[in-house]
Image (cartoon, rainbow, N blue to C red; front, side):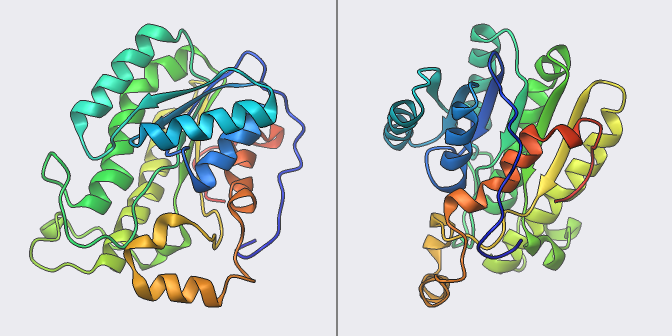
Length: 259
């Protein structure tokens, strides 16, 4: 469902499972973390804003009674931060069962990541691409395991502009977001092909039209969201597809799909 409604009906428990969720300090990611923590998982909130992250983790621990909810620093706009996160994770955690690439930026004014990539493409796709690559062996070792890529219906408006990947010749903030979400889909399909036979599945999803902080860079979108608020999903409702892709028993052998 693209608008309000829909719920993951799986009753799967995740005791003993390790989960990493990017951008889980707010919005859909936070609600996803709360759901998986409720199921007994050890949840690692990977985010840039540690203050918000600690507040979210504290809230989740209180509400779920699960004390295995921790926060780690991860800035997806900086490959040094991504590599540092992965290095520390691999030192501290023996397994990784679920990786949810949830964090993202939307409709930002033109800017570049620390490594010179256009911000949408750099954070939404390349940052998660690198993170997934660095954690892939841990996922394989922990199989059966799952990778969940949060994309968007906006991918239909995307084109991979190889002649201008960094948007230096022509930049449109809305299209830049669409391009990055298309990259998520293409990445999911190819990764699924390469992971055949490993016990690791990967799927992408559109969370629906959700009332979230993602639109904060667009005054017009903020007004539109307020006008349409009755029809928008809450963050909890928006998290349901992520939860479904992470835990649903019927997806155990399903990979490379878009939900």
